[in-house]
Amino acid sequence: MNIVLLSPHFPAQQYHYAEALKAQGARVFGLGDEPPQGLSDALAKVLDGYFYVSDLHHYDELLRTCGQIIWHHGKIDRLESLNEYWLETEAALRTDFNIPGLKNEQMAAIKEKAEMKRLFQANGVPCAAGILVDSLQQALDFGESQGYPLVLKPNIGVGASQTFKISDAESLRSHLSGPAPRGGWMLEEYIDGEIFTFDGLCDRSGQPVFYTSMVYSDGVMEVVNSDDHVAFYTLREIPADLDALGRQLLSLFPVQERFFHFEFFRQHGDKSLKALEVNLRPAGGPSVDMYNFAHDIDLYHEWANIVLHNHFNTRVERKYFCAYAGRKQHKPYLHSHHDIVARWHHLLLEADTLPGVFRRAMGDYFYLLRSANERDILEAIAFIQAC
Image (cartoon, rainbow, N blue to C red; front, side, top):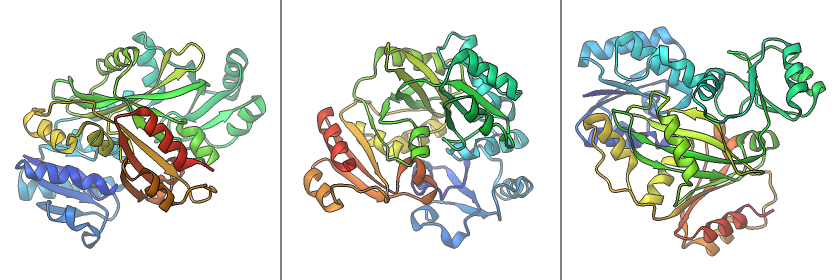
């Protein structure tokens, strides 16, 4: 099979997908805007070819380059980025070249929060009340009927960019006074709760061959807007209600041969779940590495196995809790890196910096830890992030 990976150089761990495909016999081609000399040795050595474009946002250039790949190497069997930012670009290229996978006509339910919410509501999935803003008066009427606080966010967006907690009508007027983002604004009720995820990988028929869950210390909106640090960790047991709701969402979206990352609020009051959003790609940062550490498996290999052969050969056992603890340079932490290593070396898996584009949501620096004991994980997170 000929597999094209879009932007295979970023984030850095993306090379594992190319490596896994190559190890199982695929011909792997990179298509990116990083000059060839900027590719890591680990990535360059597993690519059968790298096609450089000046800017991945220039669609005409991508069309021409995919045409060159087909002319020189034959049809493209799969095209993937495994990155939220490029999902629409992937779909457009698949549509134009008739490549299997998500196409243009499927993007609305995946990228537009209003359409996602419509699907939730039509199928009885509990979710936050919300509207696609048509006018200031409509938004003010929603605030009057729903009550404050509210959440204002782009209908089409990545992460928590331009996402705001709205405390009153004056704040709402202020935020709506400027130009709207692409796709318009979504205005929703504010949910007071913890974020839980239902994450995994599906085979070609859309059946989950691997699934897990994570719980977050804070929502991304709160972390970004307050420039705070974040922590999250995988669970060893998935709550029954989360499992049921996650599986219901799998039946509503085109998850075939894809990773998925579904986000839910567990409300602080009655502990019930409300769906937040659906993402048809892996969770961000080193999450796939965390799944691997938590289960002692290799999901990069198994993803490639699904793509090439539709097989998943690993027995899944949730052996550990695996945690991510982020830190930000401006915060006055009580414990140094040396202190952390000395105290938690027996749990520590990795410690590294993050690219600047991720710092607001995930931190400047992070630690990965694992333990079979949840209390160990919580104590380690508290130690690392103590100020």
